[in-house]
Each structure stands twice: as C-alpha cells, then as structure tokens.
Image (cartoon, rainbow, N blue to C red; front, side, top):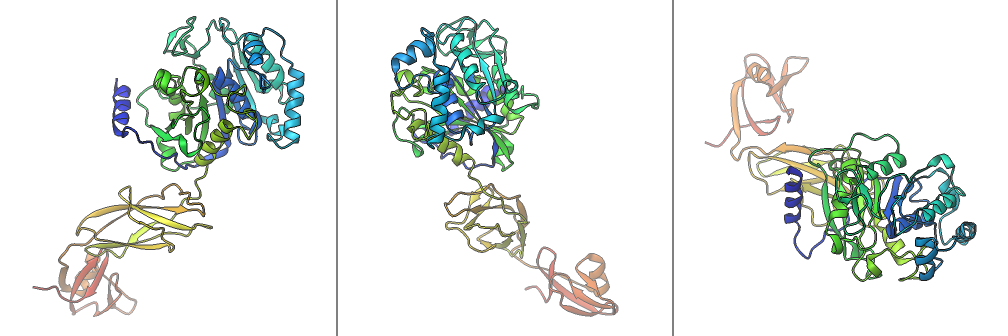
Length: 470
C-alpha cells in the first residue's frame, strides 16, 4: 500500500503533457544489458547482436527468435519465426550476421564471445513456439560458449512475461501479457547476466520513475513521444551504476496496458538494491500492433545500426552513459552577512561548471573558473551547495559532494577581553614569542599577557581588530 502511495505521488508530480529529458548518469559501459518479450525479445536479439560493443554484457530473450529471422518478410515473420511452420535457416542467418559485421553494418561478432544469454519459452506458448527459441539457442551457440547460455523451458506459461506474484494465471493468453507463474523471471534474467546480486527490495522502492522525452531521439518510426526510466537513489546521486534496457512486447506499450510492464514485471525490485538503472523505451499506437520492428514494417534496415528504432534505443543508452567526472573538493568560505565564496578542484577537460544551492541551479551561464561567489543570501542562515562539470557538448556531470556554510549575522559581534582570554576562547592564537594574533585575519594583538583587545567577528572563525557600531 505504501508503495502504491509513493507511485501515486510520483505521478501527481508529473505535469500532464510534459516529459523530462533523459538524464546523463554514471553508467558503467561494461555493464549494459537488454531483454524483451515477444517483439521485444526479437528486438533484444537485434540490439545485442548489432550493437554488441554496447550490450556486450548480454541479453535476456522471452519468446523471441534468431537474429534477422524474418529477413524482411512478414510471411517469414508470421510463419517460420513464430509458428515454426517451416524450418528456420539458422546457418544462413549466422552467415548473414558475419557478413553484416564485415560490412560494418553491425558491430564485430567477436564482442559476443563473452556475453551471457538467458532464454525463456513457456511450454504453453501458443504464439511463439518453443522450437523457435530452440533455434535461437542454436544461433547463439555459433558466437558464444554453451556455458554462457541459460535456457528455461519447463514452466507451463502462455505467451507472457512471467512473474512471481502479478498478472493473469500462468496459462492465460491475453492482455496485459504478464502472467503469475510463481517464477521470478526478471530476477532469473538479471542474476544470469550479472552474476550474484543483492536481495531484491521487498518494500517501498527508494528509486524514482520518470517519464522521459523519447522524441529527442527519434520522431515517428513507430516510437512513442515518451518512455520510462527507473533510477535507484544512489544512481541519481551520481554513483556508478549498471543499465538494463527492458523491451515490452506487442500490444503491451503504455497506451495498451498503462504502466503495468514498467512497474510490475519485477525488474525494479532487483534494480533498487543493486545500483541498476532500468530503461523502458516505448512504441506508439502507430507501430503495427504496438510491436517493435523485427521484420521491416518501418525500415529495411530494421536489424542493423541504420534502423531508426535501433539507433534511437542506442542513442538513449549513450545519453544515459554520457555523464563525465564529478568535481571534488567543494568548500565554502569567506562568509559575510549576504554572500559565500565557493571553491572546488578543476575537472580535466571541463568546458565549465554549474553551481546549485539547495538543489536549484543558481548559475545562468556556465562558470569558467573554479571559484564562485554566491550573493543575495540571508544573514545567519545555513546553506548547502553542489557543483557539476560540463563537457564540450553540454553534458552535465553528477553533482559533487555537498558543502555547507552559514552566513554571519547582520550586525557584527564584538568581544573585548584580555588577549589571554581571547586565546582561551579560540578567537586568537599565540606565537612562539608570546605575541598574540587574531584568528582568521592574523592581525597582531600584542603580548598575550597584560593587554586588552576588542575583536570583531566578520565570519566563521574570522576575527579582526576593531569595534562594533553602537
């Protein structure tokens, strides 16, 4: 119930008709994976093979088939690649894959050698026959070791994404194509691809869902104007994280079934406790049956790097992984009643910096220096700042560790006492010869004994010789 309330609050916070830009985060480029169901399964294979340098960690395929199975023919797609009404020419598809790689239309197949693949086929799947998945296993065995392939085909599931505790009964075929089979498929996929993981979060998720602007990556071509992303809290704060791309099936985008695939397939519970970002790209109602293009309904290049849908998903991954080094050493000093001086260490190659106060950006234009004076502050008030670095393309890093500082009062405070009392109170310090100096300004106050001085505090740990106005 608490999780449902959290989701509701997040949704309320999103202004209708507006979607946030996809953020740049600290994504480990060696920890990117993809999975999908049905048309999303075929698309996952396409992305894994065509962009093997990006998805080299591996892929999960639920009710999909071999790379380029349709060979541009809808008859092949609905025949041999789904119903297995005729044999799939696996050897020819393997040869085509190698030829495309040699021509530079897809990444080198050598990238697949260290990949892991998880395959799932329900024994009652009446849409994509298990024989098709068997051929997919055969296809993959040409490029990666058999030990890197896990294949689950013993569960009596219909054509659906299988969960442990949500959806239709296991043998049901129908919307939302998510079935409760008492099997955590998302967890099985992620554990095989990434190895041992922390236990999934069984409670309220700490991460956030964001509806992002997909139109920044493609216009039309069967893709929706917006997609979804789940970002665990540490990832949002700038920690290095992994990335998984989860692709829905036909008749399963957010127009068809709302956010059920995005929120109820089980990926997010594992992601929240394992520094794993989950990207959920979305097709639009303009796509055939809301399917991903795996037979050429949108482009003859549907399976290679020139395919509009393929390139769009790759661009989303690149955007997420574009965040550069984070500034370090941020400190606040030189407080006055209405200003604070901020300083930080330079980031190699940075084109500039932005300064944030309380999470809100206060620099209109990038700052070229590594010092910035924040003005217009309130007296006797504590503030917190962070700073980000910008690359030459305008990409922004994660925020630095926050630094805080407190402005001084509007009316200076004065202390009149013996130099010895000032030293004992921490307002001054004594030198080796018995001379005394004001803390911060280092002004000479005379001998530590028998002298009385008035010190005016002008900032934290900063005193000058003087007097306060009456």
